[in-house]
Length: 489
Image (cartoon, rainbow, N blue to C red; front, side, top):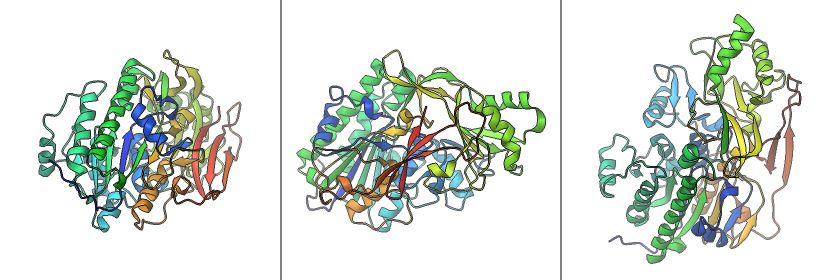
């Protein structure tokens, strides 16, 4: 029997439903989540960081920063010398450890929530059904409270922790048994320890079922019901222990999703480009949606990539090409990647980032939003990573004593705001600078009528390119904090 300290200070519970697009949140499918929204604040214009990859946004959630500041710039990155083949697969915690060793402890270039809490003598506890790398990013330097059915991170104590929860369920689709398994880690192990000041329950659904079965599919709806059931179990556990008033609850997703209408990797497209453009192209390599200099070669000059950029812009599957180096200001038709990262950049940025074309077309289940995904996984029914508004919008609901009740806030927010807000709720000093802000407009202590300045900006290329219509990207600003709304089709 777990006992609870009712006098414990404010605590925060983060519940993540990976990939849950906000327009798909149906109260009839997710009544517990709908009730949570009714009891708190629903932020209706919540944004992922670009690129809208899972581990990119997990890093933004735990640091309050864009990829330009925290350094996890894609799900799969090229970092010369970090591994034998220079590839960092951020889903693999051992790859992240290799990056940490290669960069002298700077896997993340800025402190995470786990680091900040540990400095104050507190813990961040994580339970999740996603990849080991996804969970580790929350608390990479403090691994005493990590439950994941896929790995124990090579730590004997974590095998013991998993053993308390019983046999690990099979990896079926949807992952309903695994959702319940990690939820018990929260209700049976984490809630009873007041030193766990922040608890993260990160559920890989409905993302996994979206990928495998499609948006709006019966499997995806079952996954969403499974997530909702986990929310209900946690609320019941808090109520039974009479400690719900200790917790502020943040229910969120990390990105959206789009139905895949075409499959081909950026590597294959680069081969096509070289075949058509000849040997004039410098040595290049790709990872995810990014183009890098071939490891071991000197980065090319801006002008050397003009033929490739023009070729990319002539392809119907290509929407926007972003230039990585901040000093590149005249590459035709490109937008600066740093503009999507609140002006920040770092040595892991690519030469070019390519966002594929998207549309509002509906899939067989009637869900809008398609993308020409840069992947060879023909079984992939849905994906994310592009600058499409469908990929760039995510879910955020906040409920608890610190938040207003029954409020719908249209003010733009993003994954970069979560860490600053959590630290503010706990009354703790965070690192500076960060890119995000405290979501004061949702707090019960927020003065009525006090709203930060909100404006939009349309970003276009400084120099015209090969597009028939120049690419345009919408950014929101709240004060000095920027959010990527998405490409304008």
